[in-house]
Image (cartoon, rainbow, N blue to C red):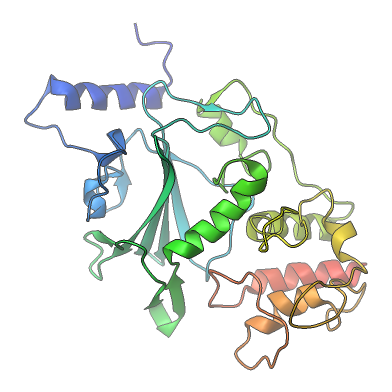
Amino acid sequence: MLSWLLPWRVAALSILIVSCGGSSDSAEERWLEDTSAPLPARLSEVGIYQDISTRTAYDDMISYVPNHVLYSDGLEKERHLYLRVSATIDASGSAWTFPIGTVLVKTFVDGDAPVETRLIFRTEAGWDYAIYRWLSDASDAERLEGNWPEVPVILTGGRPHTLPSRLDCRTCHETHEAVAGVPVLGIGSLQTSADLVAAGVFSGTPELEPVEGRTEEETAALRYFVGNCTSCHNGGDSINSAFSLYPDVAAANTIGEPTESETGEGIRVVPGSTEQSVLYISVVEASKPEYPGPFKVMPPLGVDIADEQAELVLRNWIESL
């Protein structure tokens, strides 16, 4: 009778049956099933993990990886998507519609030690955000409360990392929403993998856009931009949007184009010269403690440790021009 359901839907339904009275002694309340309720103080009460000590997720938590990942101080990430039983993402329009009750989870891991878990979720009132900071023994994580500020932490080897503030979360996601129509960054036409489509989370088959440049070097640069830059650099009206780095216009908007930076003058990309390219200086040189200025580091949020792969990708692209 349930043969038409995908396996993860069957798992989700079985959990729902239990929680509705199928076995009240073993049922566990999961905040995920009613996101209108107040957020739990502890991550273990959210309902992501069957076993939080091993970070073993429930069967209805769909693991996924975007096509082009965001660099975050070299930390690994474990991503999960939760949709209620029978709910799907409508990708028929230019702005994809995520159903009420959608929860996206991203846990940042240092080696095997979880550092933070970020949530973005949709309720009747709209989209909201939460961050949980893991305890030192990794037994659970505690929610940052209210309009929390940035929280600096120390990773293994003394490396720095900063948990973003609530305002930081809103800045990136809502700047993206102003253009894309939805604040979700890791699931969209440029980012969605074939594996996520195969998981059956969409109503219909979404039209995906592969990111390909004119050369191998340009392709790598465009993919870096999609993963790390286009949440802000999307051509929107926001002060944070500046110019667009979307694949179809990134080269035209950077090569030989003057910067609009308030802190300095120059050309965004000077063919063959990383030393004169403001884009390279902002991403690579400005991230170094000894950099004297004038340009601001890019990305402006979420990076305390220089991205060595970005340096290689941008250098190869600029020197190939």
